[in-house]
Image 1 (tube, rainbow, N blue to C red):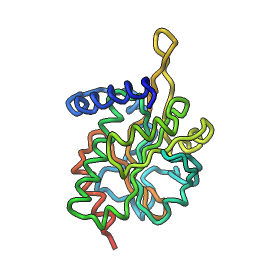
Image 2 (image 1 turned 90 degrees about the vertical axis):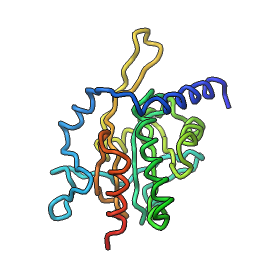
Image 3 (image 1 turned 45 degrees about the horizontal axis):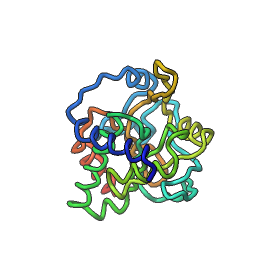
Length: 220
């Protein structure tokens, strides 16, 4: 592993430990929430419609998984998909949300392994210029082996961001030598037919998500 990648992953691991006690007010969440009405855990859209009026969420994509394999939405056909969009340089929010996803996976694995087999957790990069396949592979290993990291070219990532209505924007630092990425922070639950079932917010706990996901997977 390259020293710079190792150093950054070690730094991220430290942030993972402290992120749970960090409260952050994030302005870009408000921007995203103005664009969409977020479905709360357990809330059903009227008539089975998507929770965003007039908007379709999800659909075809082509990306690379963290092993370098080219994948499309068809590789996960028939599975429920738990999807979070973020980036590996994210100092606190992304590690916190991926830790939350990991706790959901662990709870399902312990209590309802049959439900977990129907679920595919995905972490999609919004920073493809830095989040290479190798970087994504090392990063997702910090959380749970069931999480698949997805990255791609800039056009590929821009396309899936559009499909999922993800807000993401580069923010240069004062030296113009580095940057961060402001982005919306929702975890999507997609059904086996690629339909949007729920969007979980940062304030939704792992237990909230676990109960809601289990209920939806076990519905006849």
